[in-house]
Image 1 (cartoon, rainbow, N blue to C red):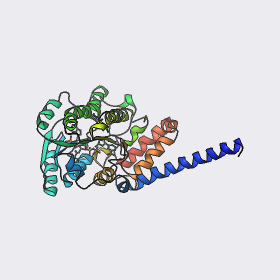
Image 2 (tube, rainbow, N blue to C red; image 1 turned 90 degrees about the vertical axis):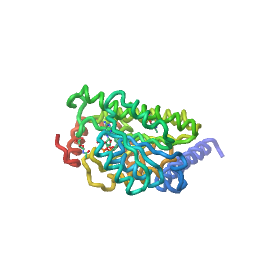
Image 3 (cartoon, rainbow, N blue to C red; image 1 turned 120 degrees about the vertical axis):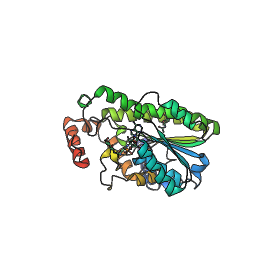
Image 4 (tube, rainbow, N blue to C red; image 1 turned 45 degrees about the vertical axis):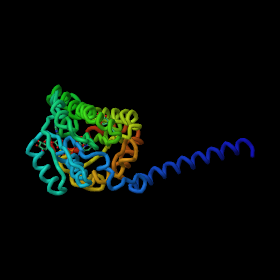
Length: 309
Ligand SMILES: NC(=O)c1ccc[n+]([C@@H]2O[C@H](COP(=O)([O-])OP(=O)(O)OC[C@H]3O[C@@H](n4cnc5c(N)ncnc54)[C@H](OP(=O)(O)O)[C@@H]3O)[C@@H](O)[C@H]2O)c1
Ligand SMILES: *[C@@H]1O[C@H](CO)[C@@H](O)[C@H](O)[C@H]1NC(C)=O
Ligand SMILES: *[C@@H]1O[C@H](CO)[C@@H](O)[C@H](O)[C@H]1NC(C)=O
């Protein structure tokens, strides 16, 4: 065999190997239950209680219901006490598990002392950092946001600081017991800098970087930390869009995404959103950042959500 033949053989083998790896990755996304099996008692084996921030509505409420169905007692933390009590009643009735409620506004400073006190004596196996807000109902440029100064503070407190504080409160118990699961809900859009959602995606990118670093620090302690990055979920935040091929109901999304719990420190949580994530990360970033795309996006969201201002 002369040397050019050898080069081509090695090159060919390399390319084939690369595509085999890609195929395996695709198969794992398509059949998560086969690759990442969780025993039926997995969540209860992590601890007695699950804490879910933003747990009275949307994705958070779906997490609370699903984890209660899998045998955990749940603490739901969010703003409105009426919404909390309604959700608690519903979850308790459907599952027979205990539901505690904590009324807290995460946009405010110094809310964590009261949370810390309330959670003191609980054996917490699962923390879902889900609470989050959009700076404005429709996408817009940074300076076009109303009450920008206040909004900045609220978004960073609610989307970023809340998650770090909750980790500070819950992680020591998990470290001591040598087990636990922390899920941080980010957003698929945070995969790239996303004009007209700049503040939102930046606050979520912080969640991801924090989570991934933390996972590396505490993996050896038996703690699973994962960032979940959905795109469209039909909730109040997104104007209750009609569920379709790429828009999930919160309940369906939570069920599917928990199947990816052992799929690494970041997951899009479903097949459709994984494909969208690949597209967003593959298409040259400039395409999403043209002035024209930004205008079209604002019109698109207006049309899809029915929100006009
Ligand atoms: N929906 C989507 O398409 C989508 C996509 C990607 C990522 N996400 C992320 O998923 C998470 C949940 O969103 P969602 O769509 O389920 O929203 P949602 O239906 O509007 O629910 C938000 C939950 O958080 C609570 N909450 C909101 N602001 C709060 C505050 N300042 N303090 C305490 N609790 C607060 C709400 O309760 P109260 O009303 O009582 O405060 C509610 O329980 C967010 O982090 C969001 O960024 C959503
Ligand atoms: C989730 O947030 C907590 C608290 O900020 C952090 O410690 C953890 O690493 C994050 N996990 C993921 C997967 O992002
Ligand atoms: C839905 O969101 C709007 C705007 O953020 C808010 O004013 C309203 O109270 C929310 N509805 C419920 C049921 O939480």
